[in-house]
Image (cartoon, rainbow, N blue to C red; front, side, top):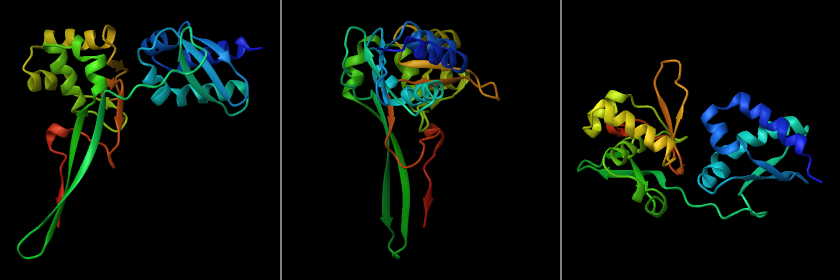
Length: 222
C-alpha cells in the first residue's frame, strides 16, 4: 500500500523550498502512485512540462523525498491517468559548442569556440503555434542568454534593446510565456535584483556554459 503520508510530508518540504509558482504549477494536487523500492512514481495533472519535471526537477524532488523517507530514493513523474511513465519529449532547445581550428601561413594555430542555440522539432510541435510577435522575439532573446542550467537573466532594458519592443510589450510577453504557454518560469531575483528566467524544455550539450552569447563569449588563443 502507498504511504500517502510520505508524499504529504515531502510536499511540505518542497512547498517551503521552491517558488510558489513552481509548486502550484507542477506539484500541487500531485499524488504518490508507488513508493515501493528505490523509485517513487508521482502522478501530475498534465503532460505539459513532463520533460522538464523528469529531466531537471526530479533530482530536487528526490532529495526532499529521501530526507523524508530516511533512505535514498529517485522520483519519476507520470501524467494523470497513467500508471507507467510516459516517454519524455525531446527538449525544445539545445545549446551546443563547436570548436574551430585555423592554421595561419606561419604554422601557428588559432582555436576558438562558437556557441549555438538550436531550435528542436519539439519547439515546432509544442510552442511555435503559440508564439508570434513580441512573445516569439522575447523567447528567442532569452534563449540566446541561457547558461548551462537553462537560466537567462537579461534585464528588461536589454530585452527591449535586442528585440526592438517597448517595455510594456516585453513585460506582457514575459507574462504570457510564463503563465499561458509555460515555456518560461520566472525565478526569484538574485542578490543583484536581476530578474531570472528558466527556459523550459532546454538541454545543454556543450562543454561550458553559453553565457551572454550576444555579448561575444567567443575566445581565441594561439
